[in-house]
Amino acid sequence: MPELPEVETMVRGLRPALEGRRIARIDVHDPSMLRGCDARELRRQGRNAVVASVGRRGKWVVIVLADHRGMIVIQPRMTGGFWLAEPARPEHVRLSIRLANAGEIVRYCDARRLGRIHWFAEEAEAERAFAQSHGPDALEIAAEDLAARLKKTRRAIKPTLMDQKVLAGIGNIYADEVLHASGIHPERVSSGLTREESGRIHAAIGRILAIAIEAEGSSFDAGYRTVLGLEGGFLAINSAYGRGGEPCRTCGDPIVKTRIAGLIGRPTYFCPSCQPRRPTRRRR
Ligand SMILES: [Zn+2]
Image 1 (tube, protein in one colour):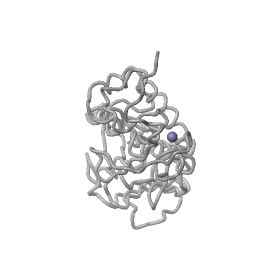
Image 2 (image 1 turned 90 degrees about the horizontal axis):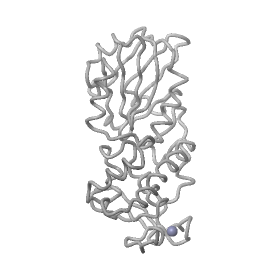
Image 3 (image 1 turned 30 degrees about the vertical axis):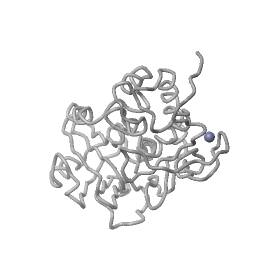
């Protein structure tokens, strides 16, 4: 599932292909994924529009059209992704943006069709929709704000970090990595964390996400690929996710694969030595 680093990598790949370019036409191949307009309306809005910018809000890709024409917001969710290259599975193309010059095409593909393609006529409308379902961006949240948000819930820290309303952008993979880097057990009660511990989590979020963006995200199975169809490299260098039974890169003990309450069907990886359930209190 694309998380913040994967969506950021998509956005960085799309920028040179779209920004400042004129759209010849937009084709919607799966109208059931559209929200906020129908296929005809999106086609009308897109015709001859210039792309002002491509950006990211949480795990959303935001394509802003110039002259206040509106914006296309795509949520890749589980299996969505963009292709500048010829897509590996042409039958999964759900939206095509054909550019005016040279006939280049940017395609949005989505195998399971769980993603969403939104049209917003005004920025304020998009902001409202985002604010209703999201907290601050994981790369922008202040340490004090994160600490205050963690204090508000007695849920385990891992599902709390994955709750987009608490902070936007982190999913199953990066929650495991952040908690490993912070030395915090995934089932610790969020409100029971000390200020020093939430500070460690805040620092780890920035550090881990930066490394993951640098590596162009995480790929496994037939899932996420970069806009050029390449695999992301993060899971070759990471510490926890997918490393059950392998030695912890910090202490050498085996990483444990488990399941925790509140996360149905998704595994959790952690190091019981580096991430104790009951940490010994550190003297200040
Ligand atoms: Zn360890």
